[in-house]
Image 1 (cartoon, rainbow, N blue to C red):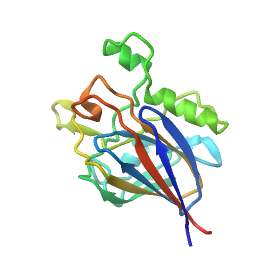
Image 2 (image 1 turned 60 degrees about the horizontal axis):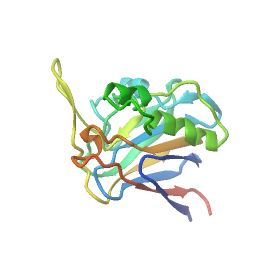
Image 3 (image 1 turned 90 degrees about the vertical axis):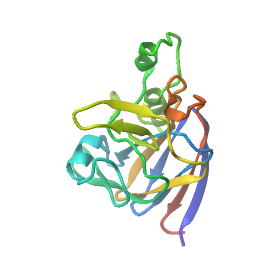
Image 4 (image 1 turned 120 degrees about the vertical axis):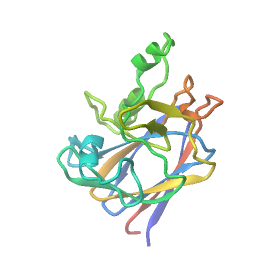
Length: 204
């Protein structure tokens, strides 16, 4: 039997999870419209991380979908998208929001952001990192037109939508409930929301 663990991540915050190979992680958009920045690191070395650039090389699709395998910067499989009970709209191109991003949007004061969320979640687990890899932005609606424009649109994820990610190696996964409240990244009401995470570890 598998052991299940359910965790709530508050709006605008992040949490890290240690996963064994074969574990599955369900990211639940509890209230809908919430983007989730997602990172993964090999347990053997924090310098080996899930890389969107490397993952796209191995994919025949312009966006993540069921069956997509995500690779590390060493071209090793680390996570797989095994189920998607949402409209299937996710982004793997855009960088994580940071303090500078909000300043460019006209918010000069300190603002919660996914980059700082990543560092904070890693620090809680005894790790540090000098950079921020490009995340997998679950449920983010980004319109990319070949040779044309790019636009961040309102999300289409509904309350209760979810994805399943399977750990292909022992890894550390960090999830950030994106704090964006200036652009409609998290919906037309510009309100970040909490998410729910369910983990099934092998064994038990």
